[in-house]
Image 1: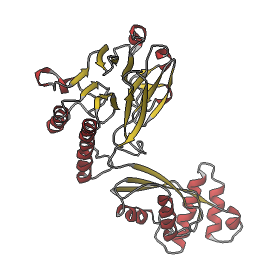
Image 2: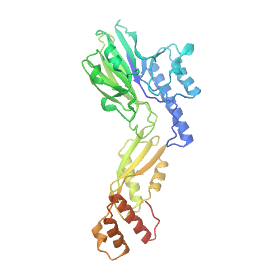
Image 3: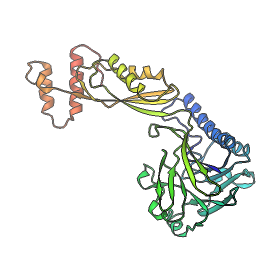
Image 4: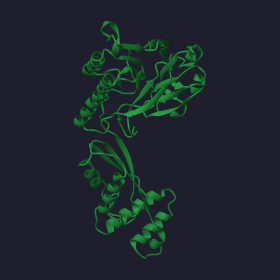
Length: 370
């Protein structure tokens, strides 16, 4: 039997923090397309159940059209059972009442809820959803009782130990889930694929989000596919990349560069070392210590990249290296400026470098660039 584990689709995100309205709308629809594509994949590849471990939607006010597309994805694959656990971004009212698809099972109420799937060999696979209450998961840790002889898949949404990010809305204590007869702990909330052992007989797994939405979600995105032996109830799992676009942060050392064409080449070489394609979103981070006389047009570098990728931005984190000895004893305006700056303890080394650079550009009659 095959079971698919996905999470954190965050459907109908506005996507407008960096993208213009046209590209934001494109990405919003693409993420919906990816979710529907996962439903198609499940049907076409003999997957019996799809586990959605929280945050299917991004806000409490998803567009009606987006919700209807998701419902249609469920209804068009009646041979697949979808298990949906509410996450911290989800709204209770999306799938309630008489119009809920027959193949959708919602873990929406607080506490522990179970459903059993019978394999072709007559063995039980028990899928248990745990929704936190006011005390988080504290009550569930003590009340969770699982059948030793069954294959036990537990679904939770929250931050487990070292996977805690900015949003610590719900904390999961993996140590309190040990020796609970858990074979596979399907987690949501952390947006990258991550897995590890869960004694005594299982593993935990974050499937990650299905599509990256920002530069804090770089790398391949997709879902996890579980292949379960119907007789032995053993399980193998594999991460399946499935996103339409990937997001990359690419560091480029420009220490040896003296002008914009050389920076362009350094950036191009750094990009070649990755698997980024024209379909992707790219942030280039310029690093290193540069000569004070460098000619650097960051906006030009960004424009060059914008023609090559769906979206691109450049972040200049390079520092200006100042050889004070070169100017310190010089009888000139540059020398006087360097002496004044060196004596000013309120300025950082980078601030001193930028001031010297601007002064040199002004003295040469060049356009001043920070």
